[in-house]
Length: 223
Image 1 (spheres, rainbow, N blue to C red):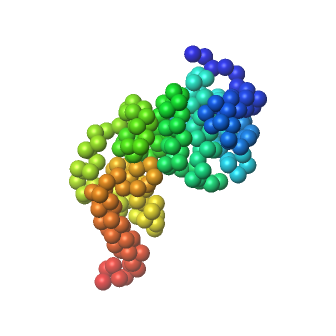
Image 2: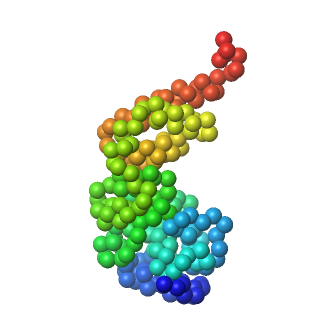
Image 3: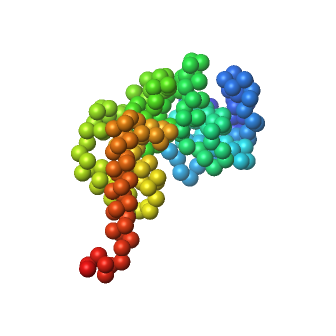
């Protein structure tokens, strides 16, 4: 399917149509711009500025209209996410509540890597209350067996924690990175189960101990 020619006017018309159809016209009015983005993420290709009420869609990157509509709906889900204020565009519970709502209404919304940046196993990261999104996430090629993460040798997780500790002094940053890679946290950054929570608690202790060694003066380390 070839792509139509999209501009600000045509994108804003589609925004208003989606707003009326799926959100009962409750979303604030946004300026929608079509231009190239310097940092394009596969499966997304759009940005949102809630403070200035502006959405940018990189229409030049997509192959067809369906991909452009997916990008627009993605940003509209951010706009509708009341749990995230300006400057917070995380794909958390609030975002996925909007995606799940669209899917319940029969909107074809293919879950892409752009919807779940950093997660090695999207299905594991989506709570059970998002059944439609979980089903769509199963189509992603990057999905791995759900048992493969909690059964990984602890030495691998410790190594990843130490690697993260070399780049950040903040455990929450390291926790998110390691938690995503090893399937320990969900899209809301909460442990997926009790076992994952226990691993993360041990990980925090190891992170703090390793950071303390890194911050120790060289003379003390040698002594």
